[in-house]
Amino acid sequence: MIKIIEIPKIKDPEGRGNLSVVEKDIVPFDIKRVYYLYDVPSDAYRGGHAHKALYQFLIPLSGSFDVILKDGTNINSVTLNKPNKGLLIVPGIWRELENFSSGAVCLVLASEVYDEADYIRDYNAFKLFKSR
Ligand code: T46
Image (tube, rainbow, N blue to C red; front, side):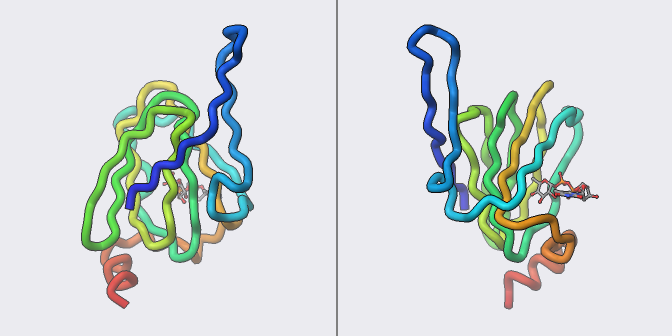
């Protein structure tokens, strides 16, 4: 359920910092949308839903946050805190994001444009979806 994908990091030989690049082969989908979460208060909770068909790749551009993943049977948790390590979330996974550090930025690459009909925002409906 947890698939961390390493993003190539190019360390500048002259000490000018790092550069990471996400090219199309890094993620197993065509990227149709990019959005990002920022200025999230440390006690805030985001997510709390699943997607029927959407693939997403979450990158902690700055700071850290926790992602709780539920597949209807198992629960896993991962802390994202390295800008060169992203989390792939496949369809049919309930996710909750919490414990955002100050200044955390979560970049999301998504396989589809925004479609509210792809969301399952009720946990009982999610369980039903998984049992089909
Ligand atoms: C996810 C987590 C990580 C749009 O109009 N367009 C968009 O592309 C998105 C993503 C959202 N919205 C609207 C829908 C809501 O009125 O923005 C509002 C906040 O969305 P939501 O409550 O779904 O935000 P999060 O942070 O709980 O969830 C988002 C994504 O929706 C979701 O797919 O996995 O980030």
